[in-house]
Length: 254
Length: 102
Image (cartoon, rainbow over the protein chains, first blue to last red):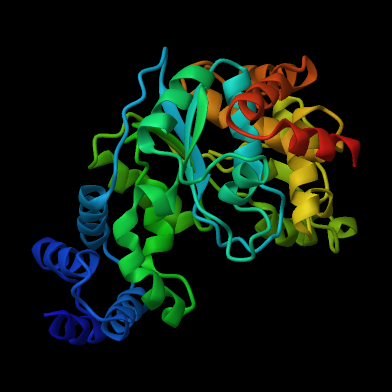
């Protein structure tokens, strides 16, 4: 099946929700080989994923994931990003998560190691001695007790090991980069999500609306574009990346 | 909707102020923001992002209010207390103390 669908994608066609559901089921069950999965993901990325395709993938990822349900006073949120801005900044979302928790919020942080191992959220939690392989029930308890806890993507999405090699083969961005922040194992309904493009700011909100989200804010740092803006408006900023509008373009509140 | 940092009481900074190269930089930046010793740009961009989270959490209604709350949480030591308490119970305090000494 995966070969036929890969071929279908290569001619620019979108897969139906049902076809994507079936192929994702096969992929996450570990019945497909790495080469075929890689070809499939590559063609899907080259065509550009439709909202239905992403939603079908998201549903299947959730079905294969381990979930927790922390009971906290107030809302439980996640703060994360799709990555991909290549700006090499410190991990702002993890730092902000502790500020939010310090201000009385509850953060069920979901994340992974960065490819470079430098500043992924998992790299930071691990550095301070947090056991990334903590049992889900333990993480649930930690979030309830401290208002913050970390869900290591590899622990909570064990079926994703079936696509790990294929993603390495593809090398570049695949649909999973976008889906990672949308598959919070605590099934949070309220999220702040950093994205790398205007297009995804809108699309993520649309997709999560279909998942019954409550409040989603997508943010994007604007300084690269701002540089151009300043170049036009104020020449003395020309060689200076400014965090004007600092970093934030708010999408919309659902 | 676009938020200008200056509209919510923050200053503009340079991208280079928040960039890191090594893992040590990454860890130190994280701790320094939370214990309020980082450069202003790092603290303010964290506050701005935390503000978004506080709005999503229904703890604050506007970016102005949320940024003020986020900055107060950092300046008052509450953010660092949160980290210390977390590490004390779920991690290794020696690691945190080691970073503070750097």
